[in-house]
Image 1 (cartoon, helix red, strand yellow):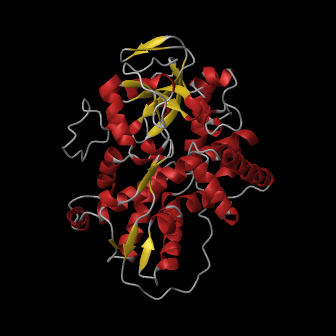
Image 2: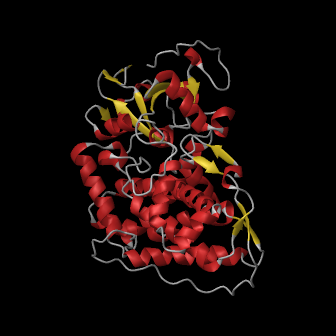
Length: 433
C-alpha cells in the first residue's frame, strides 16, 4: 500500500518495515504532535504510517485534505469491508483494531441511504430527551463525584472526576445505571485504545449491551434504547448504536473535560475573563477543541478505487486515518500563534456526513461538569501547570494521565437518594443547550 520513506531507516520501536512511522510505541505515547510535525515536513498533507501489527495506512495531516476525505464517501467509504487487510484476514478478532474496524450494522460503517436511516434514528432518539433533563443528570453525577472527595482538600481530577462523569451520564441515559462498575469503566475506555486487550474489552462491552437490549426489548422505559426500538431498529442495530455512543461519549468527553479544566483553572487571566462575563464557557471550549481536540485521529475511511490525494497514489482498499489534531494545526488553515476564538471550523468532531452526532451532548456534559467545579469548589487550584500535566497517547487520544488539584476542604455531605431519569419528551430541541 504505502510508499516507503525517502529516507530509509532500520526497524526500531518508532519505525517499521519500509522506514514507515509507527503510530504506537514510546515515542508516539510521549509526543504525538511532534510526530505529526515530522510527518508533515517529510510527506506533506498525507503520510504513509503503520498501525498496530504494522498494518499500513495513510494519515491525513492537512485541514483541507481531511475535509475532502471526510466529505467524499463515494471515494473514501466508511464501509470497512473495502479494507484490503480485513479481506486478507489480517485483522483477526484478537487484533487491537478489530473492535474499531470490524463491520457491523452501525452508523459509522454505513454510507448513503443506510447511513441516513441509522443516523436519523440516533439524532431523533437523542433529541427526545429534554435538554434540562440531561443537564440535571450531569449535575447529579458531578455533585456525587465532588461529594466523594470534598472533605479531602485534594483530588486527582482525572480519576476522581473527569473519567467518572461521562460514562455515568451515558449509562443513566441507557437505563443501565445499576450496571455501572469498574470492569465496565475499564472496558469502555480500553476498547478504543488500540491496546493488546482492546478486542477483549470490546467483547465485554458488547455482552453488557446485549443483556441491556434484551431487557429493554420487552420492558421499555424512558431511556435511549427504548426510544431506538420505537424507531424500528433491530436488536443488533440498537446494541451497535449504543456501543458507538458509549465509546464516542466516554473517553473523548473525559479528555475534553480534562483539557478544558487545564485551560480554565491553569490560566488565571482566562478564568477571570470567564467569571467576568467577557468570554462564555462554550466560546472558550471551542478554542480548546482547536488546540487540543479530544480525539487526535479518527479511524477510518477506506479507498473505493485507485485515486490520488495531495500527491500520494492511493490504492483501492487502503485505509485512511483522519488526522483531526494535525489538521487543526495545519499552517495553511490558521496562524498558529494567533487565537481562534469565534472560529468553529476545527475538525474536533470531524466534518461531512459522518460528523459526530453526539457532539452537542459531549459539549454539554463537559460544560456542565466544569460549571459544577466552579460552583462547588470556587477555590480549586491545580498544583501543576497545564504544560506539566503528564500525558500518554493511545492510538486516538492524547490522554491527561493525572491532574492533581487542591482546595479548601469541607465536611462530606450525607448521601442522598438519586432522582429518577428524566422522562422522554417529543421535543426536537438539541439534547444539551
